[in-house]
Image (cartoon, rainbow, N blue to C red; front, side):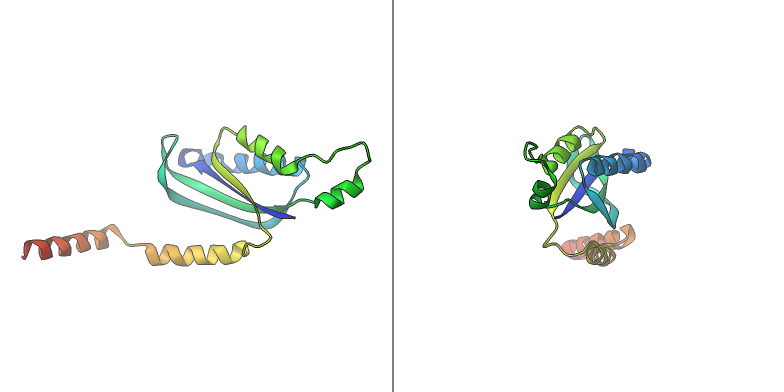
Length: 147
């Protein structure tokens, strides 16, 4: 099955992003997952403060795990299949540098490339400069004061 892992790190931890990505990569591969080539990285202002941080870097990547049926065929009768997602979740909870994370089943999700294109389009459309925002406020003030 294919899964998607998204995690958030604080803006002040951005210089350590490569180390954190390596730790997460090792964590998933140790649990039996295989990373796909797709990944996205982007910075955003957070909707609310998390551990004294208002900005963060999101990293999204997909990985695959063998189905439980495949795992059962490969195991001996006395071995019980372990909960791989549960183990990854437990290890992610122990990561001090990760503010938030989520693991979801990616079978029905669109590709990360299409998400990246849509995200870039929304970013371009939503960006306004401070000068433009100031001009809009000035127009509203003039209108309200009947100047």
